[in-house]
Image (cartoon, rainbow, N blue to C red; front, side, top):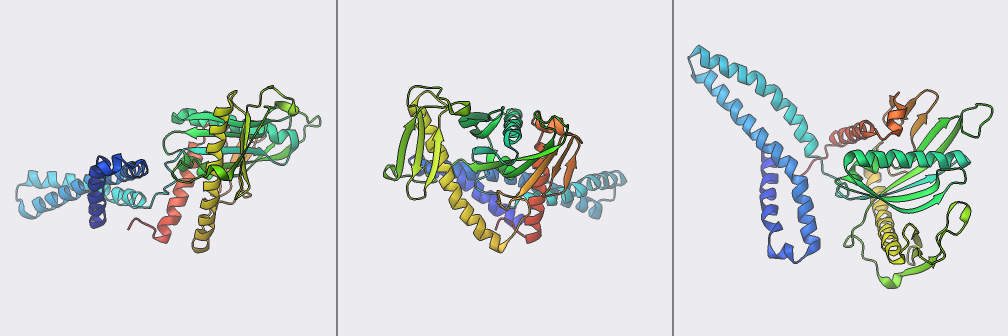
Length: 358
């Protein structure tokens, strides 16, 4: 393992030099790639330095026990070994996790889409609750959110809401949220007090950067229209809302959040680029799935992933069989525990397959 870590350290030092090279300074794509690689290698190098130090101290302590006759020195060496050996075992496991290849998309910003599914008005209200949950979570992480497009529900909430989330490792944290989220509760409109089941679909896309996907202006059709509010009534007399269609794929993105047509165009273009990029990623995921199947990130958007049961105050994560009775906290944005457990399950599966950095 030390040989593998040494090779990573050498690459880290090489990347450090390359970042400030004239070639990188003149090539933005190369500069961004090197910066990303440098950031990904940093925790491994940090662990390598600590591990190397531990191994060196273990050798020194063993040498003292072998050569030294002084009882006090021998006792100190034994005490140090008692501390160092368990820490070495811990670091063996930590480094195994660090050596699992990182998804290159993990460090990207994300585009999140929440769509009301079965359940009528109650599904729209639940979609609104999920939006509040994710924006609250983003706030705790120091991320920023930016609304792109909304279609409001007739009794509150949203039939559909699309927003950008910007920050460190956003997609890596939120990618596990894609799928069907189910809610069980008594709707506000229910007079008999019966519990209904409704659902909303969450889609998380890695935000594609300009050099990830090249869009030709000739391939994009732009339509403008008046922004609309709940029920379809017009809320703006100017044609500021923008709908973009990628002619080769038929993929559509729209934005009506801003009063400026230019700003709406930029936001819609960002979503369009991400959707096309994600379509290519889906093809790759399907290809990978033929060789390996992980229960956590199958990419199947129709899969039921989580249930929020209000009468019992229960949240159940179906992919890993995790149930928590802290629903109010979860709806308030406390979802980190679920994300951590899903990442652990994913890493465990990759370790089982023997997937590590070569």
